[in-house]
Every structure is written in structure tokens, then in C-alpha cells.
Amino acid sequence: MGLQYPPKPGTIVICDYSTGFKEPEMVKERLAVVISPRLPKRDNLCTVVPLSTSIPAHRTNYQVRIELPVEAPDPYPGKFKWAKSDMMATVSYNRLKLPFTDRDPNTGKRKYLQIILVEEELAKVREALLFALGLDHLTKNL
Image 1 (tube, helix red, strand yellow):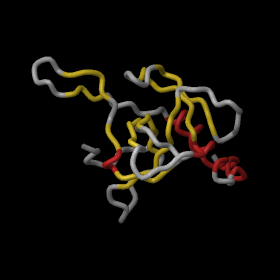
Image 2: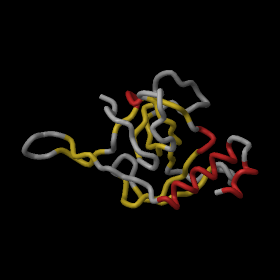
Image 3: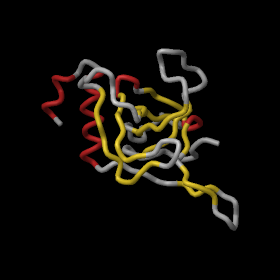
Image 4: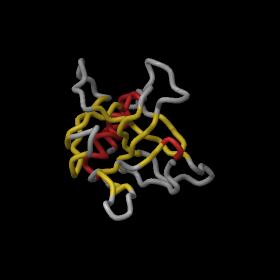
């Protein structure tokens, strides 16, 4: 079941890209960072940038290394990720869920982990996004 509320910018989510996308687009479940605020008349949608654990084969201005404030749980371990801003997408909350660590031994419910990027790390993703959109001349305004 997807998120039932609008996630704040900087929130790390798991995004399911497995339906409706075709290669070379994202086609699997992976971590992503929410970059859009809740917008009026835009219910159940937000814009995300997927995250990768792999260093890009070619260094570009639109893929940037970020550090999460805490380690992400399996299968996305580690604090350091690469934001693939050239692959940003506007998606339904139905595609999103929070990362979880394990289950509560008493209730069996998942223990969700709320990871929110610090402003400096989110700013790096937004700057990379400007490069991905060909709007790098606006980076001087950040």
C-alpha cells in the first residue's frame, strides 16, 4: 500500500518504477528522494529523484553524491548514494512507501524509518536537477 499523505521535500522513499516505465527509464524498485512540495490541486502526486548505490560510469553535473543522515536499511545499505537527477519523475503516492527496518516482535507490524535529507544535501540534488533540465544558468541563484 502506498503513502497516504504528502511526503515533505527531502524525504527518502522507496519508489516502485516496475509498472508503466520502460528501459532505459527506471524499471525497478529503488530509493528516491522527494523534491517537490505539496502543490495545490496536485493531489496524490509528487516529484522524486531516484537514488543509486553505484558510482556513475561517467561523472556529470546531473548525478550527484549525497549523504543520508542515517544508514538506509537493506537492500539499500549505506549512507552514501548517487542522486540520478536526469531520471526525475512525477509519481503517484501509490508507488511510494517508507523504508522499513524489521518487524515489531509483538505486533508483527513493520518498523518504518523516516529519513529526511538535511537542507545542504537536498540543495545538491536540486542543483543537479537544474543541470539535468538544461537550466544550469539558474544555479547561481541557489
